[in-house]
Image (cartoon, rainbow, N blue to C red; front, side, top):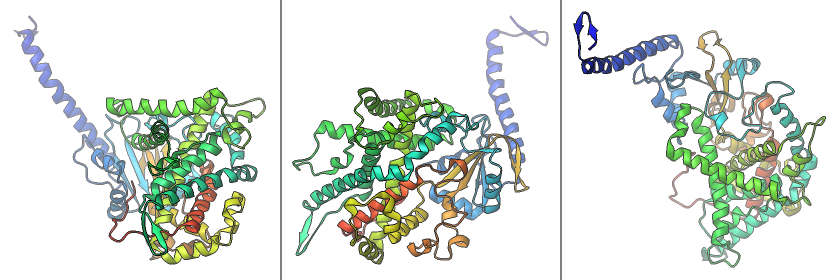
Length: 502
């Protein structure tokens, strides 16, 4: 029997006392730690915390959720151009603070100190989610895997390659036209007209997936064909439909997980339902690319990225099979959802603004879009180009660019930033800034793009990590926008709810 203070105490009594004291001691420690960290970050405006121990984890869930735009905008309105969210250090030992900014001075400081603010965070879910391609690899110098991959991938977006992709993009656009016309034939009709209600975002998501499947690795993706009426003679079989949709759904879940994991404890990804879905996604995506790599079914008669990367080398260095797989998956994931969503928003604004639709039609009607080279898109479709740019501004696909502090630092002379802090440059607020764009900032006005984007607007990122596929995204999106407006008239059904970004 143990003795405490000279008194014999039963074992069960000691155990009961430890059980009471230990939670109390842990609570006291976490409370003391939370208050100390509150004091450290006191000079940075923050949303109200529910308490020192859990810090701003409730706010984090809101701004990392599926509807982040309104809470983010509210915090910028209430707290100013720079504010932060403190995270409980016992849940986020390597990332206890997130700083959000739309302050040009702070952004300039971050841009000028690229060695201090790394473009690819470590210790977050992001680097365990994305394939190890250009999006996820860290740049550690000119001989790093990232630097080599960047040099090998860059030619894929040159004039030579854009010209080689042109016929494939027009073929997929023609397939889109075929499917839309087939659905219109099933729609309502009147004297001299026939129309159908459809979810244009779905069409754009699938046609851009088909484009990147073809030019990415020579695969004859037919996701758009899943939108044919079931009774149509060319409708896909049930098995073919499931195959196409499973690949698309897997890509969406990958993007969702990537966004979500950036701001949550690393152990959260192992929650069984999520983790099992994640494993399934990896299997679906990997199987599709491995089929092409292993079976040799790449269509080498036409230019595609996989064939080019298989042949690419630099002083004897080439990508391994695993690296090829990750880069193609990266290009696939980054290269279709983004273009598809921006073009969907552009089509929505075209439908809302009949005068814009008429101007695009006037521009496109004189052109042979079925045989247009992608390298001619900007010069031949200048107004449509501005429409797509304005849609990207008003409805930014990427609402923030993330950097991570590699050391303790003070930003702007007043914001104390410990090592590991995530800094989020708010692309959303830069896109909706009245000082930059004028008092009509929330109006859709393509003419404001006559001089292009100002310096303090970063839709494709900045520095060495700027989007390598920017040029392809532009020409593909603008081409599809002009193609659809030339072939169809768009309107919004009266009483339809306004769409919201997810």
